[in-house]
Image (cartoon, rainbow, N blue to C red; front, top):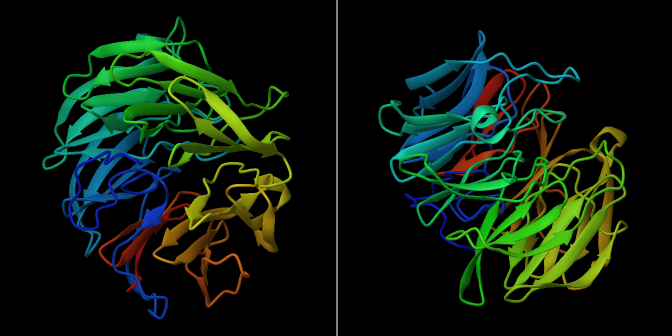
Length: 393
């Protein structure tokens, strides 16, 4: 069972991949909507996804040498407040130099983690700084390939981070109110996946997909229940998709000739049920689950990907579609919202029978890589330089 990770308002989308961190939206949605634009406005650089909580739309971006958390009116896009601090991050591969990690809202606090490893807690209503720490100085956080990218996870008053620090700070837990370190563990590098929390067998499990593989920790004490190695043999690789939990089973997926594995979790161990690189190898986008099937992108982003439906219990490929190139998948009730990197959204029923799009909409004129946020009958998404709201009900 997925935990209620944050306190929610009606149809809030307060963190990466939504209320339960699995890309599922249960609010107002109609596939027959006109999906018309409500508003759009310019924003700065970054791959950080928008979030919505308590009547605020929050976007984390970079402009004029600063990383900025900006609160906006979801109905109009007008600015309510800004929190900013300087950054000198430079991307070694020519990609965006804005923040990668998505904000997380818990009660009256917003947590942001910048591309250089700066972690801040900010008041949701006013934008005032509550506390901050520099992950480089505090934990020895490394730049890796594309900067730091863990979207914070809050559970039980603890802020959990997959940060890849040095000297036993691969994963850490902080007091969400004060920023004080509660525990740290392992020397695993971070990769680009963010943690997940779930109740399995009556216990809370914090699941971290580090660069080395899956780590299952007790979020209260930091005790490592088990580690399951799952990574590419080549150094130039990352683990980026978030662990997906259904019951007592966890799905992991990575590209670079790594592939997917379905694990059955016991108290302090994991049993593989199936694995392989031929089923559903997620490069950076997390798959979604519905009624015994997975839907997601298979293959390397830069080589062109296939959208696939895969049976959860067996890993069997049910159908595959070429030509969509790359993107992300969100489940809105019983429909797949496939946001392609080229700015086109493809809408289709989530069914193992076939992939039959009901609509294809060109929504952006530049690259879309950040996940969308769905809340209150609207979808919010960002391209290279624009934030847009559209109707989905």
